[in-house]
Length: 323
Image (cartoon, rainbow, N blue to C red; front, side):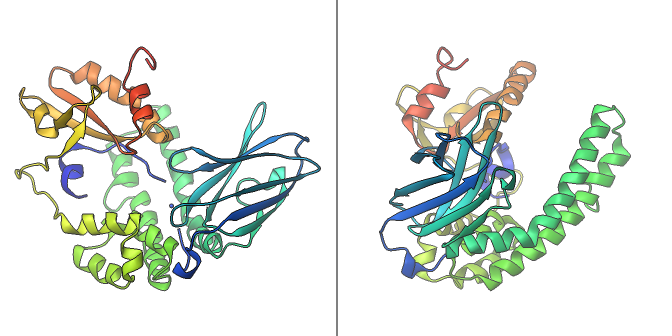
């Protein structure tokens, strides 16, 4: 990992993508759905996957619904989300301003729907097919590991067997990474190829990452994911004993504060990169609270909200509103 991530700790999940620049001109998208198994007037939401903000809302009638609108950025991940009384149905879409059709039934969620009309989403589907085998294997062994832990059968030998350098999970993940690197190499100058490169950036040496990133043209390099990869490359890994990277941000009172402010009392600092719209970030909250309870005399936990949305920050940083 790079920079502050190496030294301070990191809790975050930023689950995402592809497409040719000629189709990135501003326009309008439509999504026409034909879904069986749902009652009339069932609400359907189109959400931005990272922020959970609503892009459009529709209602199913005679098994049909329709979304329309405009996407202001390069293609990204969105969620087709259907809240039900005792359940929910969802699927991910990777799309720009395109005309898309979705067909299937309630039993086809989340991964068996027939989605057509998007070259960007088609590339996501191709990627998912290539890595699904490894994701399933990882899930099987993770569940076995959790079962052993719940049964209090976990020990150092099993820890090494599952999580060691030559452990089961490491070997499966290494095979998956090989497939992902091949996918990236075959999909240069696509948004989905760039997105996978962003998520797998730490799997490359700096030299290899520079080489593969240089194959993307300047327009792709100047996207959000491209700039993030460049920042990753421009900041070499911190070694133990070197100074952390200082930065400024607004605190809950709206004042500009430096990270270095928190190193004046002799405590360790755990820096938590988080967002209230990320389910894993929310799951980390009780863990952080427990760390604070047990080790609060020796550690300060500093949360940095990555989305830069003041309403989210105000809500989640105010104990009276959100205990």
